[in-house]
Image (tube, rainbow, N blue to C red; front, side, top):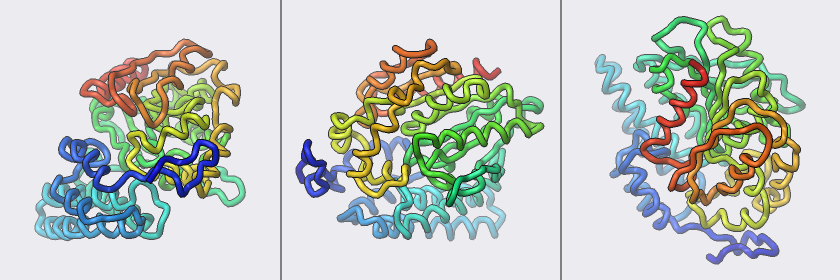
Length: 380
């Protein structure tokens, strides 16, 4: 297929990456167990990827779910036999394949069912974690048909004493709270709270020009918790979640100590000339379908029309004071342009930045540790 028309954005002319090319792109990530393949085995993923011939959502969900089911059965058998390590490992592997079944987002019946199964498997595995997951429902005052609670996963460190400093994390359009279990933060004595960003997973609201109110409800809840130090809160948003981290750092600067935006969009990412480049970039597939779903839209064309409204420059956010903000990305990011972070550095409060010779989100061997060191310094 050819790239979409510059003038019309005609869906019939949009580029769709062939599945065999996607598999070649994914092979190194599977071998290194890099997101979204944290617990995956190469042979399992290869079997699915070489059997698929389209991106039909329910077919995709069924293919990866079929790989998950045997591991779910093995985990149950191990559990009955009292083999806790075997139960944990197999539940995590079942979680992994149900997670891949719902990937990149839950925009079909099959993918929604797979998502619920992935959650079930993760919580069964969590029973054998050193620090199990606490599932919480944080009150939220939704408008109209919006939900009235924010589902969050809390974990408290074993070291130190309450109230604990808190790291709140969320992913992008395909990374849900289930993928935000930050063990190194716990080891450093930080409590962790994983949530879904607007329009993602169990979020009660879709993305919009004012969806940052989701995070305001979280901060209000934290202030009521005796085990959490509401004066030592940091946030970390990945990819599209980095957009919300930037906005939170400005809008809720008095509620947090620091914020990390990793690979997020700000302004240029929402303009037509960049949008025209994104489908041939490093995002695996269905980027526009996935981001449109997160913002309550139904098509590429609707996204093209709506996206400019999200510009934080046009919203007047960037020249306002912000909480300490760390910007991290790869200079070759083809999902969201590095120029968005250069723009941030030209406006408002001074910021910290670390840019890598890498692609989206700047992943290298040092990236995660560099971010954690900065967060720990701010919160400790």
